Image (spheres, rainbow, N blue to C red):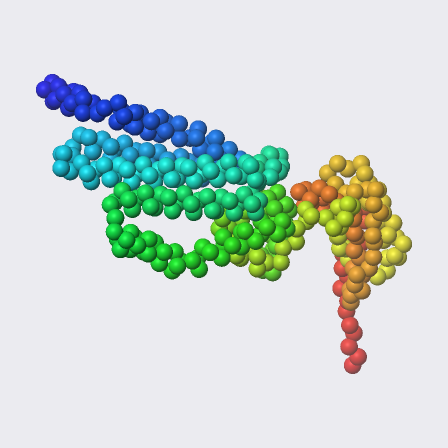
Length: 359
């Protein structure tokens, strides 16, 4: 009972030491901790995974918790002579928190103002542009410099030598690590400025990284791609992405759409007219098949691309504008041709050629 009474006395004494401003600071931080998730959802409502969203909520809450702990320690435990250091700690934490929060909020408003709305996987989101990314980068640097100067002033590094030493240390750190982050930042800006790879585009990577996917997000250091074949998310460094040959299938060279092609090997004993009739019948059947998204108003382009030792290789060229269902269209159109070939006794298998050696 006495222990409980002593706790109550300590709590009452603690609140008596605090004025209205102190209570307001603690209350605001408690509210920010409680509504951290809502704040993150408001600022980043369209471009984050659940895990990243949760991480940012935890960062905000941890900073609020540190501020409350430091503020409480400053008022409850420090003596009058020691309160100078406690006040510095609280001020530094508040500066870091406000810098972090303002930087993300400013980036959100810049993206809303200078970004561009686009539909990705059925959801309309605001995507980054060259202007929004550049302004976000500059605003982040400006806020960082202001926060750094504020922290230096709080730590009372008044002399030019002391302040220069802190800034110089940070400058040396950035100079030594610039090879790890600078190429990706500038590559990301180049990608956004070129307009050739935008969020929502269907791209195909070549040169050792064969991949067909949708560009989900071009971030400061990397680009996220949704792999359409295996249905998973990929992350590629921006500097690495620029080294690949990128085929942007969403940017058509004409109003007809993307010119796709399928290859088939047919035995030499099958007449060319029969092969063309097979492909033409399959093409006409696609008009009634909603799972095969082919522009039926444009005729097929059928031709021989190789006369090999075992079979004739034919190519069927067609147009499609539904590039996000490209894999499904390829599979269904190929299956349709296979079924018709069986009905017409046209073998798509490659025969084996034997050479008889003379004795």
